[in-house]
Length: 258
Image 1: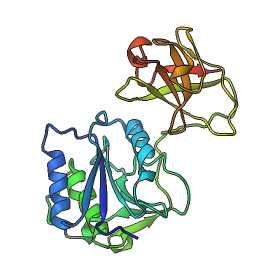
Image 2 (image 1 turned 45 degrees about the vertical axis):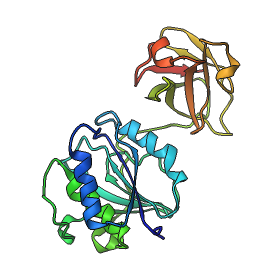
Image 3 (image 1 turned 90 degrees about the horizontal axis):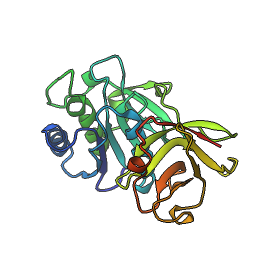
Image 4 (image 1 turned 180 degrees about the vertical axis):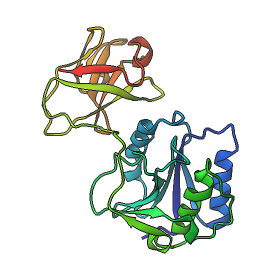
């Protein structure tokens, strides 16, 4: 059930220095003026689907059931990738079918392809701005109580486009840096569960070994540590410092979990 007033949470790589975000919000305001629009972030690195998927995965469960997520990180805009609505039994996700939804929990899932010819959004029809012309109207229609079947066709599933976030089942295991938060902590591509073996260290490509602990304070100030982050991913940090700077890490930096 959609909350009253409806909630539309937006995640994009648009930044805030151009007009793209304003145009998307203008469409939402025009079609669904009572919707409560919440910004997740608009600072996803341009075209970085992995980062967008990770950020979405870390916060969507905190929203009220029935919330609508408008997710636009779309380097393939204008290509054959499909515009979709995905319903997981609790939340609606409006997004390109490019792996951006690759970290959602499995469950009672239904996926639909948005058919723009089945609705009149009274917006321009651009091949490069589907956020404004397809995704925003679809999210607004959902907020107004429309069902996906009113303007979509069912799909068997959504694609992942090679975006993988493997669980740790055995050691050693290869991983890579996925995302850096504002503190310089590196969130990696490896997920740790209660069934995962307990690691002893992360070994960087240069041979440096980073001990595994419970939190930053398992090591002294300025020292590195690896740990299970709040989102279930292996993270690498420097106590009161930046792992990104101190360890010279970049997105896609490889390492071995031992």
